[in-house]
Image (tube, helix red, strand yellow):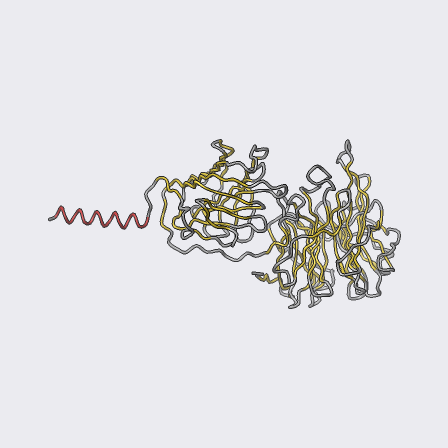
Length: 528
């Protein structure tokens, strides 16, 4: 009887133990139904024994939720259907603690990029390898191995690299698609699997995407946003295949100016359309609608110049306009030659327009401005702003202060940005002085409460605010960990502020976040 009792106890212990831990070894993920999967996006499903993720218009994920793994190997076959544009990425996810916190390998057209995602930043790059032979339309085998803090990335049985990261210890596995239609099959997970103790959750994002692919190569950057008189928000941005997109076979006219619209205060956005696409690389657009109803889009253009370093020349600053609420656009008009823009045309209370500009010659940079008194039909000669010996890249933006003077913020090349004042409507400017902190491409915006906000790059995407008309500035406030920035802001109907900015890197997209500005600081608001 004692032997029988002991056997029953051992059997009970085994059952209890097995309910807490799956047998160490290999588990083939069930692809016969979706009951063991969490698919937050409606663009993922299981079909004919394959996990299918349609990432052409979103970034769908699928998480296998019954078990968690610490030390783990995730191996699967994947195929991305051929497309002319997009990064065509299949992502392998490991140690997913929820739908925002995990490691992943981003297998795109020719790279394998190891990253970590958290609630604030979904692209914390750890390591990458480029130049891979991984054609679309072909089945490949991806594999991610985790042993303690060591992560190993493989493709088609070949070890690509190893890297260490100590942040995440265990979690679920999963997959995602990026700018492509992805098929995944033969999913095998090796390691000691622990039955998941809690339901799988997907915390809301702190941001929304304005655009992830405008159809020009899946690199979107340099956004600017304004409110139209019909209530919609309009966001313009650069669309190309990289930071500079000269004409090539895939993009014969080079980078272009694109836009998206929002009718719900920035929560969702229309597919991208084109403002202007000339024969060269058209970039860094900004947008404004004047009181008259005219919509002005300013930008600058780079032209290919083989043999030069860098291999392009600048063609100055240009603009197009629409007098029929986006139905048609004018032919381009040059605002100035040898000067460039990164901020919007500002309409002053007296009806004049002013545009912040910048230039560089012989290694020296400075800010400038141009003025129009006829709705942009013609522009004054450029008015230089003395850099005072400071090393500036300028990227000037301008705001009117309460006393009627104009304040110009300028990108710094070293440890500080610069500023200058005009007391005669922009005709003359004071010598630039240091602002006291670094920043690229400052953007100025006044909140409904009268607070002046200045968003900029460095560190990452950041902002400062001033409650005393730009005399002093707050401590730096981090907007997002992504390093693209080139931000722009617009006031929403409830008095909060929408800020748009870009990510940078392969597949860079345009993001938007929402906040409220008070004299006590910045309060972030979820948009989902």
